[in-house]
Length: 206
Image (cartoon, rainbow, N blue to C red):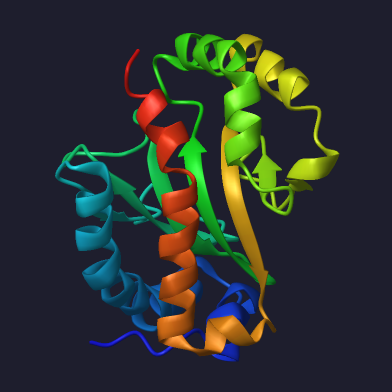
């Protein structure tokens, strides 16, 4: 399957009532697109990072009543899972697509990574463009543009608060024309992951 872009139906998935109805739409509308995107992103990441990378598509398996408000795919160097490792994400909420470098709360070495980032903070700040976003909770549809963030304070919280997370990247509004063009979007993803490559690699040497 060739990725041809996201459509309005993809975002309308998150307005469907009921777990079964929404999950069926996620599985039929969105997950095949994640798979199609991965056919270009996986070899790109493996070349960029010089290591094997694996695609993980969120299954939302723990949900029994409430339908998911977003869905995502993850790229990680661990074949068995991604949550305990630094990883890249591509996913959707009802109003936008996100492209993240993600460090979520299951990560066992959060404090060490936060400490390393604080030590290298000036170098990291030079790598992250001003118009990128920072999120501290992947469960919430909230993010702050990087130029308006007190990054040292974000890292302090990431280091000391158990549930705090760190996600760095971009958000594309659902009406952004780039989402309608499969090649253009994949090119933006590649550019984003390449931009964050240095940050990702530095967090592996802990």
